[in-house]
Amino acid sequence: MAVKTEVFSGMAARVKDIQKGMPAERMGLIPGDVILKLGKHEPIEAVEMPSVLEDLSISHEWIVIQRDTIIFRVSPAGGALGAILEAYPLPEEITLETEGPWMQYHACIRPNDALLLIPDSISPIWWAVPVIAYGYFRLWQMMAATLFLYGIGYVTSPLAFGVVYASSAMILITGGPYLLRDTAFKDGFHPRGRIAIGRPGDVAKLEMVTGAMLRLNTKSK
Image 1 (cartoon, rainbow, N blue to C red):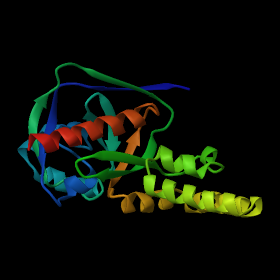
Image 2 (image 1 turned 180 degrees about the vertical axis):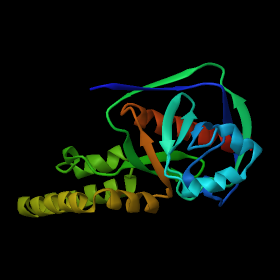
Image 3 (image 1 turned 120 degrees about the vertical axis):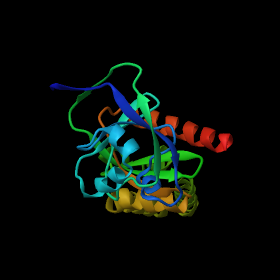
Image 4 (image 1 turned 90 degrees about the vertical axis):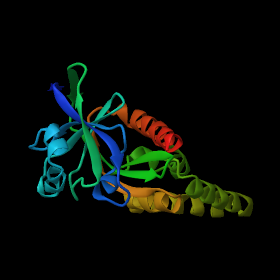
């Protein structure tokens, strides 16, 4: 599979702050993010003319963000008004190499705590083990409820356990990412924009880095 290379250099824009309730917050930007590419605009244009952030809502080009060392894309739907930006000269040239298509995720943030990325489709490997899937996506309430039902089925009869287990698998299969997002909202996560990641190994890294930055930003205020 061919390797695709993108190179970023020169002047970027860094997010200094995010205004509460504005499109930039709903998009999922956080203080410290570095904007490497802003659709058809240069990132520095948004520093000089904030109206550029509103124009993004009619663009279909993804915004390229660097968060710590992780590079990902964010959907421009809704625009990015509310992001307070500053000019940021990149200290060195950044090279991103990817293979294959960028995978898309629904981003959910628990305020001041954590990022959860839910894929557009649930891999079949999770279908037979729904309770592990809930644990993997850190949906603890759904995981606990499912284990509770397994326990009831187990002490009742082998048939009851089989029915409960099969039902839990069917719920995950039919509900898919919609079920996971709904469960995440009940666990205190708020919906954010769509994110695309070019390297599968960066998914867990982005979640971990974002959680650390959210908690750090809370302590610094």
